Length: 101
Image 1 (cartoon, rainbow, N blue to C red):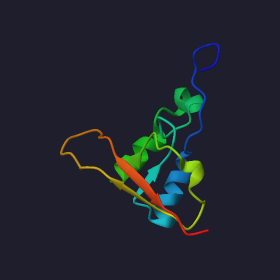
Image 2: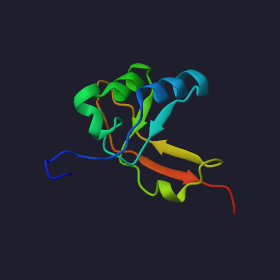
Image 3: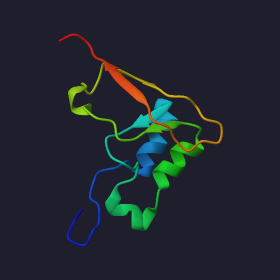
């Protein structure tokens, strides 16, 4: 938080999320931050990227940890959680299988 109480953390750009859905056919996105959108832009754009990804019937996983230990390519991340009917979220159990060094 800054001196005025505003959060500052990175997030997904809406155009990036659209591109990932259209060009890479992703099923989900994940990140360490508590929201999909960058905090510094939420006043201007609200939750545009989060709203978009969820309207595509994709999942998002927030508050992942240790992503810095996962290589940028070659790993598979598994996330397991029940899909609740009418639910808005649920704790997930996620782990990465990384290629041998």
